[in-house]
Amino acid sequence: MRGKALVMALVLGLATACGGGETGGTTAKGGEDGTPQVTISPADGNGKARPDQGITVTAAGGRLGTVSVKLKGADVPGTLSPDKTRWRSKWTLQPGAGYQVSATATSAKGKSTTATSAFRASRATAATRVNNVVPSENETVGTGMPVFVQFNKAVPEKARPAIERAIEISSTTPTEGAWRWLSAGESFNGLPSVVFRPKQPWKPRQRVTVTVHYAGLKIGDNVYGDRDVTHTFKIGDSHVINISAKTHRLVVKKNGRPVRTWGVSLGSGGDVQGDGIDHLLTTSGVHLTMDHSRLERMRPPGKKKGDPGWYDEKVPWATRISNSGEYIHQNMDDPSCLGKRNCSHGCVRSPTADAQWFFHWSYRGDIVSITGTKRSLQWTNGWGYWQLPFAQWAKGSALGTPITTTQA
Image 1: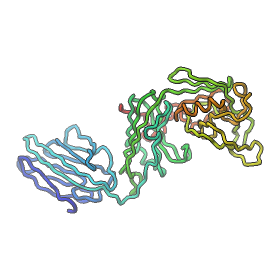
Image 2: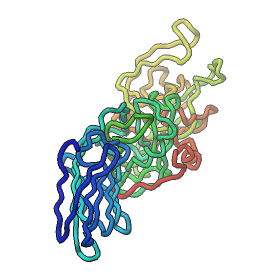
Image 3: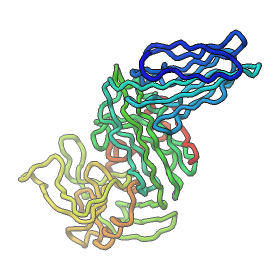
Image 4: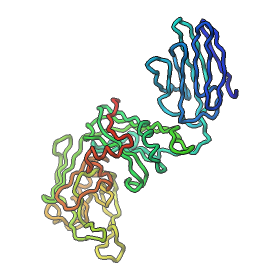
C-alpha cells in the first residue's frame, strides 16, 4: 500500500484493515462482537483516484455518524442516505488535489468503528476549463441580464447534463429560468456557452451567485474539467427603454417610472444585400444593452471602401444593443432628423447630452424594446434571447426542464 498508512480508532470493539487498489476502497472491518465495518473509496494512499468518481463512504452492520472530508482544510459537501449507511460527495474531485476522509459508524449495540483515508485525485488527464462566467464578479447588471458559462472548447452533448447539474445558481429572490446550450456560431463572442435566462426579468436590487463545479467532471475520454469557478453579481434597478420608429421617441423608465425621454432617428432602410436583409433598418424586438464604447469605429457590414453606401466613422457615447452593429449613440449627422424621421444606418441616433447620459446611466443587461420597423431581431443576434418564448428557450437545456434558483 502506497502513501500514508491507514489509521483506525476503535471504540468498544476490534477491527482489522485491508487496503484497496487505485479503484478500490479502504475498509475497517468489523469484529465478531458486532463492531460495524466502514469502507472509504478511494483507498488510502491512492495517488491516481479518478476525479469523476467522487468519494463514497459505506457502513455495514451499523449506521454512519460523523463523516468528515477535507480539501485544503475546507469541508467537502456530501449527502447521507436516508438509512445512514452510505455517504456520497456532492461534487466531483479536483484533479491533483489531496483529500482527507474520516468516518465513524455505530452498531445497534453501541459499538463503533472509525476509519480514515488520505488520497490524491489523478492529474494525469487532459483538462478543459470554464473560460469565463458573465456577468463579471461584483458587476451590477440590468433585469434582463442572462448568465453565461463559457468554455474554451466545444462540449460534447453527452457531457452537458452533468455540467448543468453541476452548476449552482442562487439569488436573493428565487427565480425560475432555464439553461440553453449555444454553439460557437450561435454565441455572441464565438465561445461555446450554456446560458441561463430567467422566465421573467430578474427582480431588481438583489444578489446572484453562480458556482460551476467543473473540477473533475468527465467531459470526454480521459478529459476532465480543471477547476471550479464562482461569480457573484448584483441586479440593479429596473431600467426599461422603449423606442418607437413611428413616433421617433425614446422613453427611459427606472423602476417603472419615466425618468427621461428624447427624440431619436432610427434606420432609414434601402440597402437590401444578397442575404435579403435590409441592413439599414433597425431591428424590432427586445434587445439588451451589451457593452459601452466611449468612441466606437463604425463601418457598414458586407461593404468595402469605394462601395456605394460605404462609411467609416468614429462615433462617441455608443451603447451596443446587438451584434449587427446597432447602438444607441450620439448623433453625428443632420440634427433635424431627431424626433422627426429615420435617417440613420440602423443605429438609434440621439442628442449628444442624452447619449452621454445613457452611456453612464445604463447597465449591461438593460431591456431595450424597439417597435415599428420591418426587420425583426433574431434571437441569436447579440443578446436577443428574450425574442424566444420561454418554453422554446427551455428546450435548449440538456436536462429539458426549467429550474428555480435557490435562495441566497
